Length: 263
Image (tube, rainbow, N blue to C red; front, top):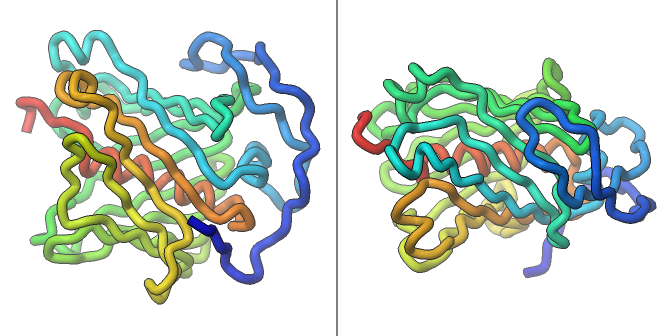
């Protein structure tokens, strides 16, 4: 699929990084060292830590399997590895929600997700307030705020009302509409991938997608650890790439997390 970016987006130039870095400083909650994507050079007018996104047009997101959750069904904070197409880790993401909120609110819970780079810096923060997701409550739909770095809002993911189809709008920091996300009628991922198309505002052009990837029967049935692929135009503003990434996490919680017996 040919990826075409929106007009007027910045050109970040060619990649000039060095070889992959094998060992990096560790931040709170970051897993054992692995092959990280090398740090790109600084980019003008780019929030610190988003330089990585200037060099890539797709991300692979792997949710880690939590043993306690798999064995007894107790919901734990979600953790994710975010990699580029070569398998190099770009970011590590960790949910920060207390156990009572996870237990009583289940998949509808409000959350904060901290996204950390290879230097242990929190470069992106996603915040979701507690809101309804059912189509019968169009006045209280989902809205995710994306900050990069924390405290600096770069965009939003807003759920749009539709009686039966997943619909979202991606907005910039001024709450101006930039892109749409259209999901399928059926989000069941049994034995197949589920695609949420990233579209231009008029809905005519598909410029990318968020894909919930089928992970195999055992993983799908016994855990809620999901795998996603995200594609976006290479020349899309890095801030909006971060918003697309935020949309992926919101879609995961809304459609692919299991609520067990709590709700």
